[in-house]
Image (cartoon, rainbow, N blue to C red):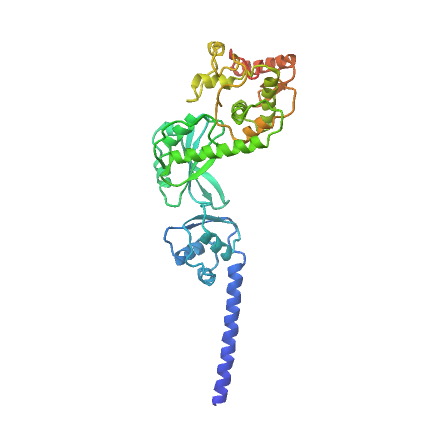
Length: 393
C-alpha cells in the first residue's frame, strides 16, 4: 500500500513538474514573443503608477495578452520597480519584454497629447495634437491663433496635463522680435525677456520644454544651437567665397531664406547673390528693403512703395553696395549651408515664374523676357505693382 502511494505521489510530482516547466516555457514565449497589437500603441505611465495598474491598462488596450505574465516577467527581470513616468510609443507587435524595456528606460515622451506653440512668418498658432490609435500617427485636434483671443479651454487643459508634451516651434525665416513675441504668448512658459536677441542668432527648430520653462533659458539654447550650426558650416566651407566672416555668411543665409521657399532653389539663389558680390553689382533684393521698413517687427502686408525703394537706408540693397549690416531674419541650417555652398552658375538675375519658384537668367536680355512673362502673370492675377521684381538688376 505504502509503496503504491509513494509511486503515485512521485508520478504526480513528475506531472506537476512537467506542467510547471511547460507553464514557465509558455510564459517565456508569451513574454518575449510578438504581442497581439496590430497597430502602434501609446503606453502611458502616470506619476506614481504601480506595475499592476500599468499591466491591467496594457491588457485593456490590447497591447499585451496577459497582465500576469507581464508582471511576472518584469519582476523576474528585476524591473518591476523601475517604471518611468511618461507616454511612450510602442510599435505593432511589440513584445512584453520590449514594452517593459521601454517604460523602465525613461527618456522624453514619444507619444500622447502634444501642445505646440508655433511661431510662423505670418502668424502664430497653438496646436493641440494627439495620436490616432488606428494609424499611430499624430493628428491635429485643434488649432488657435493667439491674435484671435484667449486660448480655447480644450487646449489650455491639455497643456496642464502632467503627461502632455509641450513644444515651442520656430519656423525658418522669422525674426528675433517675432520669436520673443511668440514666447510672451506661450502660456506654458514663464519668465521675462529683457531684450530681443541679435537678428539671425536664433536657430529655427522645434524645442521640447517643461511646463513653466524659462523663456530666456530657451532663447539662450536657441542662440547656442545657431552658433554651433554656423561654426560647423563655416569650418566646412569651400575656398573663395566673398565673405569676410561667419557673420557675413549668416547675413547672406538670411537673404536666401527670405527669397525662396523652394528647398531646391536655395543654392541657386545663393549663387546669384554671390555672383553679384563678386562682380561688384548691388544685391537689389526686396526682403532687405522690407526689413529696413519694418525693423523686423511684423510683416509688410503690401507692396513696397517707390519712395521706400528710392530712400537710402542701411538695408536698401538697391541703394547700397554689398551686404546689409545685419541678417534680416533667422535662417535655418539649409539656408546657412546654401549660403556657404552656393551652386556654381553664371546667373545674375532671377524673377518669379508664377509657380512659386523662380526663372534664373544669365543676361539682361533673358531676364527682361522673364520679367515680361511675370508681369503678364501679375496682370492676370490682378497683382501688378510698381516695385521692382526680385533680383531685377
